[in-house]
Image (cartoon, rainbow, N blue to C red):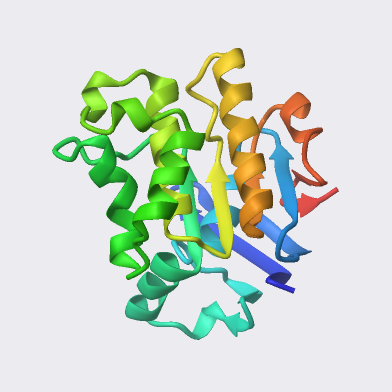
Amino acid sequence: MLLALKDVSKSYTTSEGPIQVLRGVSLSLDAGENAALTGESGSGKSTLLHIVGGLDTADSGTVHLDGRDIAGMDDQQLAELRRGTVGLVFQQFNLIPSLDVAANLAFQARLAGRHDERWAAMLAERLGLSQLLKRYPEQLSGGQQQRVAIGRTLAARPKIILADEPTGNLDEATGDAVLDLMLGLQAETGAALLMVTHSARLAARFGRRFHLTGGKLA
């Protein structure tokens, strides 16, 4: 089992008092599996994803990732986890504007010490970026930028990919094409994929589906 959450709860303090976002959430995901995480706005989907990725901490419960309990990790260990084990894809592309496509694709893999020219070239070809390697992010369409973001994540060969509404800024046709590529490459690499989406249509394409409501899995 690559990912195991047990009884994870999370609340935030606001001016109007504490807000309980997650209430005892438990789920698991094996290597090679893909799952969609759905729920209404504010249901805790992004919070759950951030906890799995070590970007936020749970108030209670356990999160085991690749056999390790991430609750006991310090900031340096969490940063190493995100470099080497976890791949993150967000709705905002977060590309580095001063780097061209080739350098953006290689960025995460170089940080992880896993840069492989042949793997990067194959990803660029599969993602339709081979003719765009010398361009900069501002010269790309939204769909092209998201494909670069996905390629940057996969170039480091993460064990699990966490994607937060990665097609949310794209039109339907482009979003479908990007999801096709992501699911295909995820299956080929054997990584696990957990993707937040508000779309029941997109969620139906995943092997497993989790739905958050009232801070719990329905």
